[in-house]
Length: 144
Image (cartoon, helix red, strand yellow):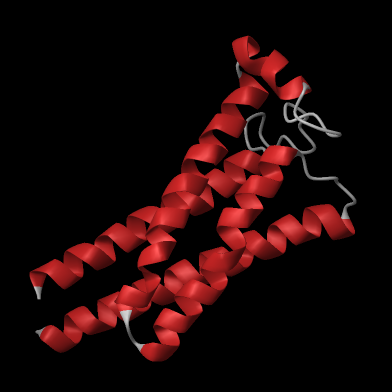
């Protein structure tokens, strides 16, 4: 039974690592290939996302979930920043707050797939998946 739980934990770590790689590659694609200049809140989200590749990669390599604990905190904070950024883009009451965000307005929508999927939405989805997958890892550890 313990080996099965270890496999689930390992799969969750790979899942989290994969999400962080895709999110990082996506942000670099939008800025470096598409030429979209990141706003201040986008930079903050990058600060919380990029280290997750190293954190979870190291946890996989060392087979130690305790190494990944900072990833839970980074993803939680990143999730909150992404949610705020998405609200700045979409709530009329916060639109003004996004205008004074720096050289690029934080309420600017470079992409708007399906009328609601923006770059902060994509980042927020990644942070939420990472956060809750890590919570599942913690539950697995507790049940051992």
